[in-house]
Image 1 (tube, rainbow, N blue to C red):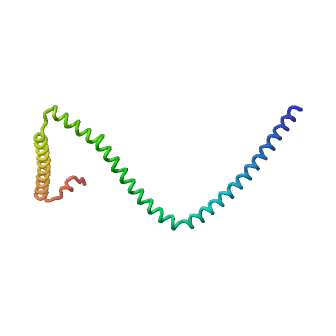
Image 2 (image 1 turned 135 degrees about the horizontal axis):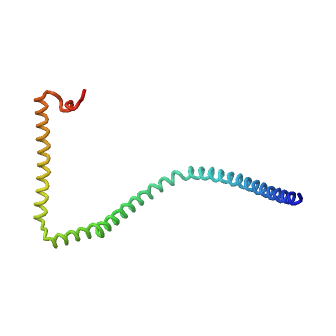
Image 3 (image 1 turned 45 degrees about the vertical axis):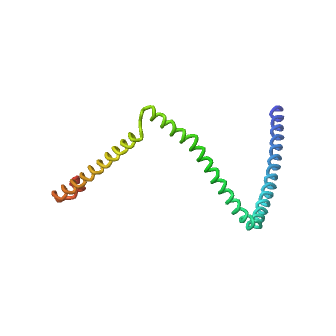
Length: 149
């Protein structure tokens, strides 16, 4: 029984310490909240007072930032172009020279490819014309031929 009583007193003492720490933290939170509110109010007042001169200054800064962004973009673009793109183009040119591919070969290839594309378009146009003629002969819409009643 004595052991239980000592343990109870110890727990009660720890509880009192925790309760005191809680009150201290609560008071600190109230103080911090008040200081925060005051700083917010004063920062709003300060921003209103400096808004007009600041906006003029900001416009000048934005122009400077825009020029800086353009300069950076040009620099980065040139770096990418020279280090990656032109390097890759040179590699392709070397491979074409090894394989014996000339500009004339490329031109003929592109012309043949374009002719194939044009013939595909012509085939599709001819198909559409034939479908229209069949619809006229049958007398019903092409879309309605698949309806099942």
